[in-house]
Amino acid sequence: MKVYISSDMEGSTGIVSPHQVTPGRSEYEFGCRMQLHDTLAAVKAALAWGADSVTVNDSHERMINLDPSMFPRGVSVISGSPKILGMVEGAADHDAAIFLGYHAMAGTEKAVLDHSYDSKVVYGLKVNGTRLGETGLNALFCGALDVPVAMVAGDTAVCFEASSLLGSTLVTCVLKEGLGRHSAVTRSPDDTSVLISEAVKKALDAASAGKSPVLKMEAPYKAELTFHTTAQTDAAALVPGSERVSGRTLVFTTDDIFEIRRWYSSSIDCASLA
Ligand SMILES: [Zn+2]
Image (cartoon, rainbow, N blue to C red):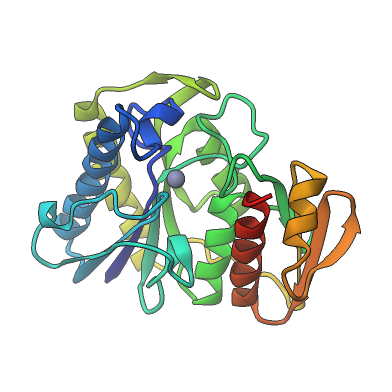
């Protein structure tokens, strides 16, 4: 069993504030410490379960939050950005994916740091009519690679979002309960280590039995990206292949699911300059 872990920061143990997840801010060190805490708990559980290898993809911001020297032997850490598949770079040829430290999509109530890729730019994203956040879109890319998503960990809201999309065979691990965007009932890291460890064992049992969900959609894929402002949409409309269908929404249609990743990433980068 080759295990893949996409490790984001916002959904990690104890994190509630942008100050804790933004490089350069004084509390950022805490964010890195908690992301590492949760990721190490999952890695150790996967190795104890009997995983042949574990690949960790640092999936937050600049993607250099995790110190590779902190990981045990047998673990590869994909570090840095940009990466063509971003948060699921390197997921191909794995038997199970685990999304750690994930957060709910933009616009979710009682969800810690809810956003979809860029909180200042992206209002919402749909693919083939289904609203997707980072969990959904990354699950879709994993599905295209025939990699099941065995587990999602984060706050109550992202676990609900993930189960709603991926079904009851997905293992979820609630690490905190959001009270609002910037507040939550958190848990001791000693407790969340145990929760993550138990969830990873359950998830890998399910994956090895062929029960973990694999998200698939039918081609052609139609992505609809809505921005916060018309100025952002003006800038993003420069990306080839975009069709503007309203003041704040662009549409992109393709038979190659991975083209969506290139398109929305380029569109968001352009929009963020507006
Ligand atoms: Zn993040």
